[in-house]
Image (cartoon, rainbow, N blue to C red):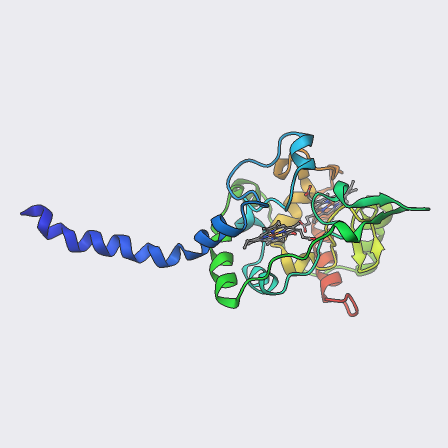
Length: 230
Ligand code: HEC
Ligand code: HEC
């Protein structure tokens, strides 16, 4: 008798999450061939070298949801040499150059799929602990001072572009970082890149709290700037 009474309830419980799961179904079908969504970050250089796409296992700690929704509908390259960059760079006369022929366009999602997928990606929060450590004050900073620090004092520009054609090739462009990324993630990744990606090439420069804050403001200023092409 009791079982009969319970049946309708069980039905509701199964039916409701089925809709919300659509985004995860798409991710499991279309994304996991190239992106890690659950495991730990690569622990060996071989794993890094074999990466076909950036790690999304902590997407919810990293991205802005609105940016994910729009990027997935209209993906544009963020890493000049894709992922993993070592596989897409050839030795040029003076500098290394990107071997464009080896880079493929990213798959495009419909608005409905992008919205569902972004929603699910925002649930992936492997590193709430690291995010909780970042205490950022709202404010603004000087673009010129930020650039001095980014380029001259900390040497970040060797790997990152601060304008579409200005800067290094191995890391993601930073002139769109503020639009893409949560400020706490930016601060935390610079504070300790290896806490997020144990085998990343990005060095830990032991940036002080005050300077982390200035870098976050600098990226805001860059993203708000004219002529950054995005
Ligand atoms: C064939 C491999 C491949 C597949 C399949 C793929 N991606 Fe990607 N994805 C990449 C590569 C490579 C990049 C780096 C693009 C760049 O910046 O040049 C990327 C970048 C991204 C980014 C931006 C991340 C960042 O910080 O640079 C997101 C978000 C993303 N993919 C989500 C998805 C989702 C969601 C799916 C499934 C619907 C998917 N991808 C399917 C290879 C793939
Ligand atoms: C040797 C090259 C290198 C240097 C130098 C470097 N980075 Fe990076 N950086 C990277 C790579 C590569 C990534 C992508 C993370 C990964 O996949 O390993 C990255 C990621 C980042 C991210 C996250 C961006 C995103 O879109 O995910 C920020 C922010 C960043 N770096 C800022 C800095 C700052 C600030 C400095 C200077 C203190 C710096 N980087 C120095 C290579 C470098």
